[in-house]
Length: 569
Image (cartoon, rainbow, N blue to C red):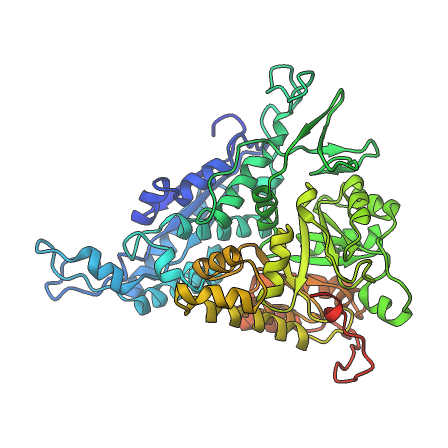
């Protein structure tokens, strides 16, 4: 151990060897954990073997092939040895990733080497064996074979030669490792957000703010991690963002927010003990902040107690409301922004990001929410629209915005207005997932159709869906929306949440489905687990059992049911 820093050891073959080259995952982890401190000094060992072992056996008996039974035995011995080193040693295994067979054959053709036979199917067998062994030994594991193939363009985007990982492939590895670190029941937690920053106290020797009369504390280094998240999402479509720290701020009430108190001219405030210096928050940074929520569950809450329950269940953020959507439907009337006092109370109660809703077109409500210090604003059709023709110009704000959509055109119109995160609308407050499925399939289907178009067809298609051409082309190149895409509206069970993830969403909003159920705490935990393990039916079956009564829900075939999703275009 060096000082109080946790030491991460990467152990494995060429996937590890090259992890510090060309934007590799080892280098990315090193950047994210730079200057992080740990009072207990545990170590983490990340182990990867399997790619070479899975090469087909050569007729001569030579070569790197290891039969799968022997591979399992070797990995078992490695795991047992690492677990014996110290009770403070943590271990994560990486399973065998997939490969692009055609690209690999082209890159390894040689008159010097005998033919190397690698197939994606044998990679799967070795990956599954590694995952099964880790479950047996109660070890943490990242299933890379499945994780990478959740990306539609994985065969071209994730590799440099069909085998070794590109920067985008490495980004997936980093995301999956960070997800394991966040969810692991380890003391201390090794997730980067849970670790204090070295020399985090204010100092007159820190960098000077633009006002010239204050310094920016080193805890603002959170921006470096935001920058990594932003690059992960946007590196293929925009230049590197300026390395400006993102201000943390307090409004003097004990509420700490990523964004400080606001004003009518919408300039960022850096709030410290002596000054309020303006700074800027670019759209790229907003998108990067939204990336930090990927793979998570965002829960609607109406009290600080519910917010704490959501955080304890593993929610990545909460949405502060005065009424959940089911009550808005039942009680009727005009639904407006929540009381700022309630939002502040909820922010004091939790350490995770807090979102709040503003009415469509009501930019003053958004200004107030920004001044309160919320971390994200949802311009929501669940509230009664304030403007039936115009949405908020979200570029005028430093706080990231979330917006709903039913199809690709609507999604890209919201992104053009400045939305840094998109959720498919569904029908909130119904407990009926059918509309959420319809909207997710619509967006995903539109993206798949777009991917297969010739470039010269994109002009007419952009016009037909009433979306900006540059964003349509960007979506075609990425094979997905240019911002994070969550699902919302009607999710009420762990199976609903897993369905949204398997359909391709980055995460899930859950509104009335939790706190209108018989056992909110258990259901909240189950939905978080379902989003994490959405492709594992055995785990889904376990977490779905014994949850008590789900919310009753509403039959959407009834024409009397108001369609919130149709409130905006």
